[in-house]
Each structure stands twice: as structure tokens, then as C-alpha cells.
Length: 61
Image 1 (cartoon, helix red, strand yellow):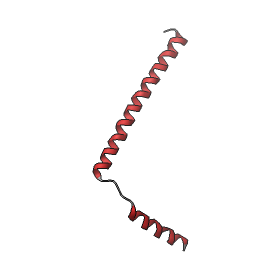
Image 2 (cartoon, one colour):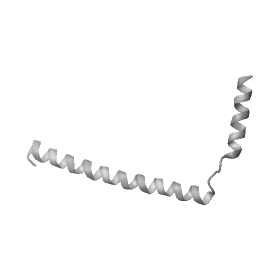
Image 3 (spheres, rainbow, N blue to C red):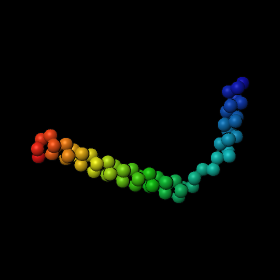
Image 4 (cartoon, rainbow, N blue to C red):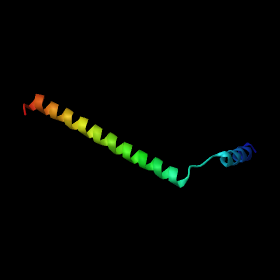
């Protein structure tokens, strides 16, 4: 019986949730994509720089 009570509470709470609009969801999705690409580019640049430094010091290039 506790299970039915739990799902009843879940159903009641879900009716109180304010879901984002399509426009808000689209904006937030693009924000995540752009931010991820910026971080990926930044980390790739750092990785390339560190690799270049290591090659310079270890291999004399």
C-alpha cells in the first residue's frame, strides 16, 4: 500500500511542475551545445600545447 501512496504523491507533485516552453528548451539546448564546443576547443588547444612542449623537451624538436 505504501507503493500506491508513493505514486499518488508523485502524480500530485508532477502536476505542480512548471515545464519549460519549447522556445526555452531550444535556447537552453543551444547554450549547452555552444558551451560544450567552446570547452572542447579550449581543452584541445591546451592538449596540443602540452604535447608540443613535451615533444620539444623530450625529443628536441
